[in-house]
Image (cartoon, rainbow, N blue to C red; front, side, top):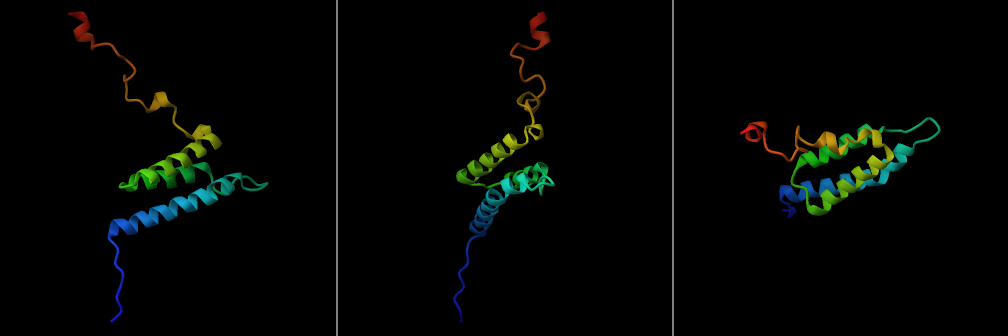
Amino acid sequence: MDPTLTLPSHTLSATLIDQDIAHIRRVMQPSLLGDLGGSILPPAYWRKRLHRLLDAGHLSHAQLCAVDSLLLQLDQFDPAGCVPAWKALPLRAHENHPPLSQRLS
């Protein structure tokens, strides 16, 4: 009988996420730079891949930092694809005054 090494599912998942992050780190920039015909894969593709990793949940601090770093690199390459900070805020979040009903009383 062969002893089989079994790893907890979260360990396997973390390893797969690490491998995916390493792969994206290696190929994202060369793919964006492409060749004379333009980029091989567009910034939207990489942004979607990185957000899919974030949506997977249970990322370690190091993994979150790595994904954030890649997103920042992507934003520098394609600033048009990133959402301006003021659009990311909830509606009326920039206002510091009390509601109208309290101001009128």
